[in-house]
Amino acid sequence: MLKADLLRSLTIDPRLHPRGQPQLSAASGLVCANARVYVVADDEHHLAVFGDGTSPGRLHRLFDGDLPDDRKARKRLKPDLETLLWLPMRRALVALGSGSRPNRHTGVLIPLDVDGEPLAGPLHFDLQPLYEPLRAALGEINIEGAMLLGEEFVLLNRGVAGRSDNVAVHYPLQALIDAIDGRMRTVAPALIRRYTLGHLDAVPLAFTDAAALPDGGWVFSAVAEDTGDSYADGDCNGSVVGVVDAGGELVAPHRLDGPWKVEGVAARVEAEGMSLCLVTDADDPAQASQLLLARL
Image (cartoon, rainbow, N blue to C red):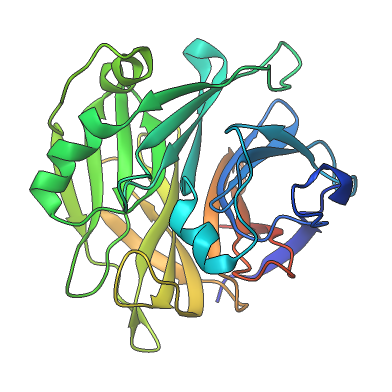
């Protein structure tokens, strides 16, 4: 078991939230940069920014309008932002929809100022040029992780037992830049690599996020969620984190010691090992997502 310590709850000022919530409850994508923690939640129209360990996070709007309060209607209409990555050559964050439904094919470029604060006017772009060839190759897709790996842009597909695979999909980095700039019709993946992650208590593990490492490998998070498709939620048996080496080989994952449903990961390599920041999905609007720290 790998110990995960609680750093903070992802609280926000309820006066700034469309439904008056005092917390994010469905955190899904995480970037730690510029002395800040940036989080997207898969059922929000906003980016949340946290500057310290206690102050409420600040919300920055990514989409016009507000999602309905009804849970089923909200799920049906949400853009389902599941990934967040740092794009240094644009000094911007990039959030990506999961692609699991036709209304979940939008990416968002979020420029930052010199202090790391989001600027007004996020740019929306179409993910169909990337997702349609991938759907043709895999059938069902549910993109849950994204990272820059050297000169490559890598997506992680979250598998569902009997329906789809856990897959790392490699593209040239330029494919992402072209998609953002609207210059691309379609592009096929350069490499599709499938991974078998095992089970927790008889429930299959599936990718939820990844972060690149300096040596060319990457660290990932995965959860054992008892669900039969890429749309419906299910009971979560727990989470693991693991490493894929620079050759693409899976290193044995480590089970986390709590009932966490980890949906986002950020990594920092240090002399004594690796520090991982993790965000959880509470799957309950009344419960706050959590920011955790684990060390490998």
